[in-house]
Image (cartoon, rainbow, N blue to C red; front, top):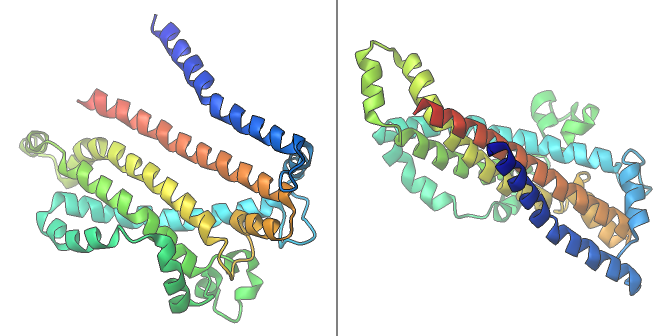
Length: 284
């Protein structure tokens, strides 16, 4: 019975979830039929998607290279947000003094839109890239990929992802029941054992939930940031440049890749959230 219910639920989700994409395809088909100049044909867009390694004449790289650069920037910025927000969140959730210390700064900083900070970050860091930091300014050009990962862009990606993860981690640690901690202490458990068997199982679902929210914000900010002047690669750059040159097949191809990638990233984190949620239920 449970298997039948799961299959029926899956069928319902797929059916309902297909309605809006079908309407979008219908609107696309109508745009082609009426002869709108900005709407490419299905074949033109599919041709770009089928040959992702074919570099267009007017861009710095192919669709595949643009996707690679976007994912690289996302990995650096989002990864930096995770490794800084989680430890600080654990400390703030565990110790009231740390929580009181950072709360005013966090509450004043998190409403600031990361895109607003990009011009300021660009003024502060200029065109300094990860390659300049790792290999020096004179040898940065030898590492072209990392030379296109600007510090200013990484900063705003970190800003967009840091606060959701931090607040979710604090909430997860703070919500751990004191009776479980006291029980571990009575049993003679040390700090690591208490963290592993109590804090980690109860906090991990909250952390992943914060990561899921942060991923959506970071992905949105990244695509917008790649449109700013000074960027010469990435899906956002391709999207903007294709519009300027009226190569709308690349615009639509980039939009499809952006949407599908965002869906895959969110679905992966949602699956992790469900898995850790089941783990939390089993622990309880």
